[in-house]
Image 1 (tube, rainbow, N blue to C red):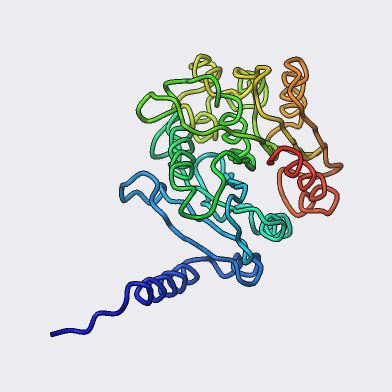
Image 2: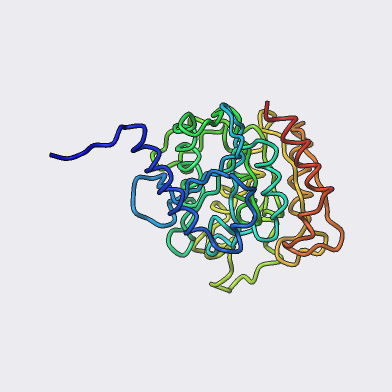
Length: 305
């Protein structure tokens, strides 16, 4: 004989236990970012395997409602470093504002270039977002209102995701099939947009260079790969609107990469706005200022219905 708890009570206990486990896994410096009452779902496997890099987190506002728009965070780190918490540390107020304004928020991991070269990273991102689309109802998310935000390498992936979303590039998904979701808006922080335009900057014979690691070869050895991986390759009139930020003194990704992306978007008549942050480096708290947050807030309210 045994005593069985009612299903409703069992569910509540399981939910509380899961939240406790989740909170313990979040780095201490990140915990304080999230507003009180934020509901956290941590380390969800989106690929049905045991790979650590195939995980995502979902954060829901304390006053969560049904059909919430979703902002999806893609971290930077030269395609071979960091994790789904990266960039949050210096963008604390921006992260907080998403939840305070009623958006659901997700952050995804993807395989490093040192584990698998391109297009593994874009395949992982597409698989993660497909999972979010298919499971949106479980979390009260509106699967027809997805926006992307990415930083550096993550800015590249966010731009590539948004611009290739309507192009059906077989190499960009695990099974070669079209993704089910549509991207409604893209926020790109200092991501590379055209790898061929980076040739003068790159140490051609440096095997540790981030782009060389990404392609498993130099750009000059694989210009075809550089073109395949460049967001500018896919710009057309049906692309989602872009909000772009770049530091004037970026020593890693020249701000001309964002100027070039904007030029392509303008030619295709895709709504876009570019902010060059005066004296700003490649990343840092200079990007987490009120003026930028206001632009992000207006942008999301305009394009996530």
